[in-house]
Image (cartoon, rainbow, N blue to C red; front, side, top):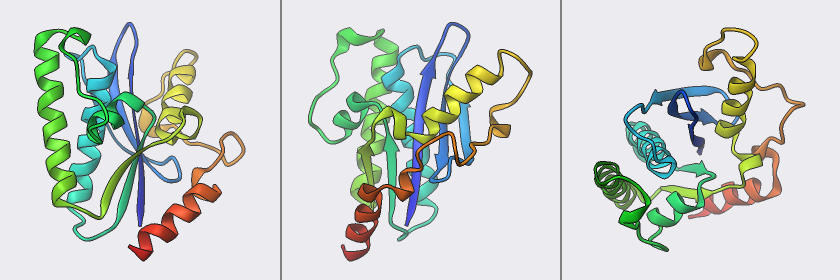
Length: 169
């Protein structure tokens, strides 16, 4: 079973999403200069992770994201509202959301779940990158997490139980 973590960020200079594995190792990131809505960026990150997982057919996987709104959009608990962003961003958000839902319907062994911000390894890598680049020039691909600075979700009881449930299903 594969566990991926996605997170998006917007600041005054840039916006991008990042995908990491269950150990916080870099998988992919994409800059989203045209997109100034964090939920849309989060959905782009989830979509990118799902497209990557689709290449590994029949392998169970869980994509983790810390944006409750994006995850709730995917699970149909809430619907996007137009007033939250410009029209072109809203249309892109709806398009990406529909693509995510289609991929999840086609791949029943893949799920998207919400995790708290402090357990989202992609978010931890982004925060470390943003702190590090203030003092030295570094690319996000070079950011490594040491075992002592974060709680490794794969060791968490919740994640162990989730792995068991996914294997049994």
